[in-house]
Amino acid sequence: MLSGGRPGPHNIEGVGVGFTPPLWDPALVDEILPVGTDDAKEMTRRLAREEALFAGTSSGANVVAAIRVAKKLGPGGRVVTLMTDSGLKYLSTDVYRKR
Image (cartoon, rainbow, N blue to C red; front, side):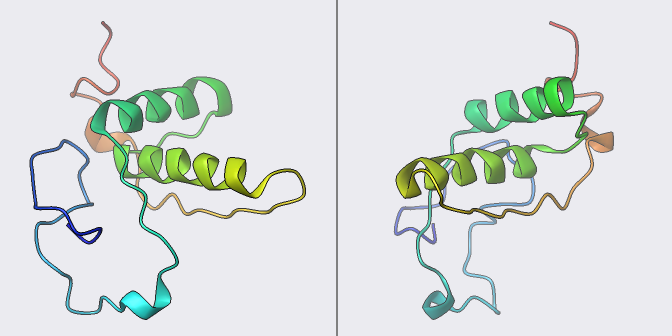
């Protein structure tokens, strides 16, 4: 929604609340990168498996977007992202459930 689209369904808890947050200041934002639910979930699993970072899907989405930015910047660029959630509440979901 903040990138100009209409609110829609997704399974990334903590992002895309369907309205403009009251503290939103677009002047502070360089770019908004939409990330699909499947990409966010896959990155969440990858972070746990490869990096031992037990996070939720919003963190997976942050990392997907950070990798996209890093690719644009190229060698020598620096990117920082935050992972502010735990994977604990996702243990009973398809994010971490054995397939």
